[in-house]
Image: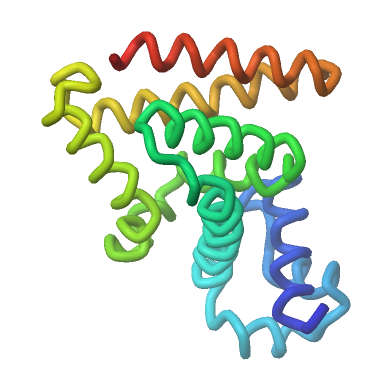
Length: 186
């Protein structure tokens, strides 16, 4: 792990444990075993570190989903893989997903460039728009549909984490809750 990766890993751990405001950069540098000056070499401000960590995690999640989803053709199949892969990734990467929840509820989200956000959501929004146009799903605002999907995913993840199900039980909950989501939008 290089110094930048050590800083991101330390920041992830501390931000999730203590929050953004209660995690000074000095604590992050100490946790990473790196001098504070080195932290500022990679991330000129704490805000830059927070945003870089979000982009790093979002990129890894997106790569994971893109690899799994590439062979799906139907809307239902694509959404199911997207939903299931996100939840399985979240269960395997609890700290990262918890950070994303924190980030999405913070003022930092508005500081991310619109192009960066669109890079991740544009393909799914375009798919939803086409599906509304083709009358595959309900004729609703696609931003609302996307919000429902995201909210459903985050809520189901919280439920799964709180209940500590076995892997087969998790899979059942994930599949059943996808069916509920699909029934809601089609």
